[in-house]
Image 1 (cartoon, rainbow, N blue to C red):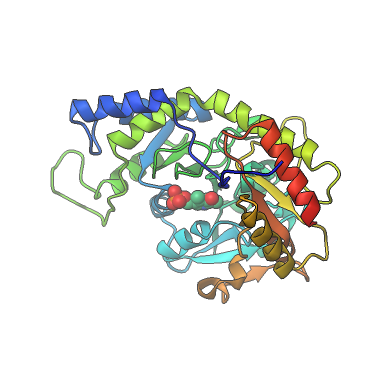
Image 2: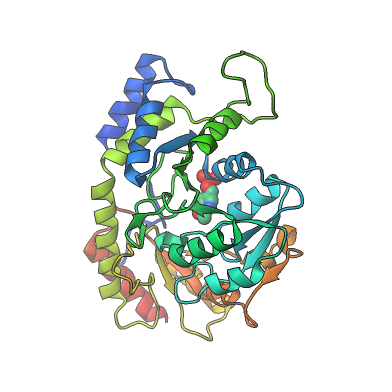
Length: 373
Ligand SMILES: *Cc1c(COP(=O)(O)O)cnc(C)c1O
């Protein structure tokens, strides 16, 4: 079956409910960063993650930055990040004035390898930022033990993993803090937006203070620190409230799509999203993420992507490892001899993952891929 209409890798899943809440926000006049949807969204998101606090911010990158700033991580400090992630994880560390230390991934899970994290720790290390890549939960048990042993701040970058669980606990509520993104291609969107989740009262208060120009609560226009404007708007929060109300069904749909892909790709030598062997883990599917067989080159992967595009099937490559990006190539790193981040990164391709896909379209994608590989 030929595919007639172009299939993007990701699309927001929006309904009449989002439209209604956004209209409600517009009609109320509360379109900026005050308004009832902000409070509703923060309360609902905290509940969703099982945390005491959820502080809304302008995006997932500012969520990371303001959290590092609130934790007083800055110049002279080292922060451990995975070598394979979206660049924002490492960029936020740089924005804070600290030095990212790049640690290789476990090639089975694509998440940071806890054994290598332990080896990366120095006297300057202040924090670890595991990333739940493509919706797969990082090994929070091992990372929590390491953080505790070395007294490190553990910040989960959960931008790609809304609703995932590690050892029975929802991500974002396991480390000292968690951050999420609500960009248009994420599992839950507010257009642009982000949130910080935490159980720490003082940290939450500090983030609220810093994200809003660091203005003293009891003395207007008195700013005892240098703050940011990292606020979310009520319009965005209206979208977020609707998305959270629909989240369970959206997530079930995504899981259904991944299972159709597993069937359609069953005879192909492309490994789809890893499956945890721990029954207390729950991965969510952000994007349908495939890894081509060992030995496939970067060029072959890109050639496949070009051919797929001619057939109306959009794809996107996995991230380029941080150590291969100019601003981060000088960073201290603990990588395998042949870096797993390079290996997996070069062979990885994400497939159309929109909730709009049907089983027959997924089967058609499988047929096209099989004729090209
Ligand atoms: C999307 C993403 C971010 C950044 O989120 P923005 O809202 O785009 O700033 C951070 N980390 C990871 C792992 C992401 O995928």
